[in-house]
Image 1 (cartoon, rainbow, N blue to C red):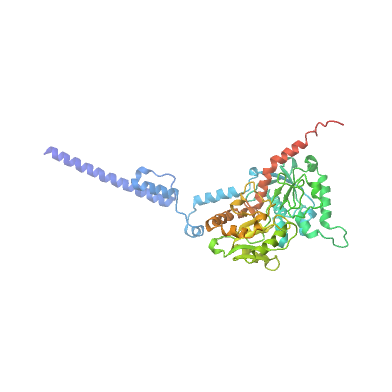
Image 2: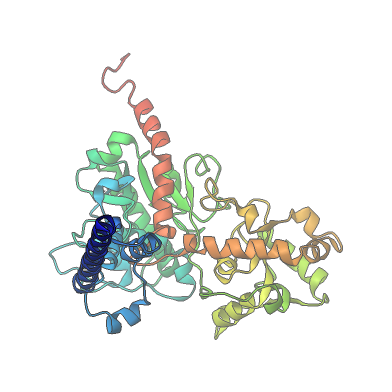
Length: 480
């Protein structure tokens, strides 16, 4: 009997202890949950205080709280989402211009305004040769002028590269000691000068564009930077095919930024030395493009000048070959009236867009097609393309030799043979690469401005080698 009584008492004792232990655990867990709700996201979770099946879910929720759309967070979240703040701070830091990360150091001449913004009718206030682009940016004329406005966007980017609060990429940084520079940038708005001042206006006997080119040659020849390198590290934008006609032979040691080599002697301009830059497209960029294969009723689109001189005769031949084909739009057109808007709508509703050689191997039409996500059909044997050392155009363009294109039925058989799947692959790629041809201020990551700076940076080793070779006998001259 004593043994049973003892066992019974022990059992009750253990039961009482178990109850007290369970109650203690319950109180601890309750206290923990209250703290969790009152203090926000915990930094540490003691797994021993929770049932095994709850451990993972609590940690998962603590480390990865549910995210609401930003517009809902502003309304529903009473306390700051620290992780979201951290993310935004990281993005801001990443977007901020860090001069130490620049791939190119650029010295830009402080040239008189008549060479650059003065051509936009901007007048200096006597304090600087440059406009205060924080307060007011002189606007560039529209229409066809815009397609060759490359030097304008590059100059704006350099002027803003040293702003302490600049955000966005800065592949190129302006330096003020030319000895620190990788290249010397010449801010002459040559295409605008040609477009506006290539005709004689009485009582003048020589047009202003020619006078400016003559002044430019004299200005550069007098600079210590030009004398030091012979101009080999200088960069001049001459994007319009007829710009710099009078000065190019005198300045040929420099790096030209061009639209193509159509009107240049190979000794003056070539891929080894110079750079091809995209036109600024005039058609509107197709944002949020969901117009796939079945949503583009026109098979092949071309709108532009049909009768051209020089290498553009093929346009006329193709017009007669294709004018009666089904699902083809091949028509004369210009930018007059609503020409740009009409072309933009036409390209956005077409599967393929013809890019045919005209007076020169290239045209703005190719970049209008890319911006419209209309797969380009390129028929131009001598064309050179921007950034082709890093871009494979065959992924989103179709190349056709001129001799093949004018064969009866060849072109249409080729185009009709490209099915939905293959076309869609090219269309998707176009939506990825269209950012590379965008000119804008402020510049954005991997847009045309940043791509040009990166392309110039890739040329720096060759430029430097040429400069070094030219100095071999300068320090210790030989002979008489």
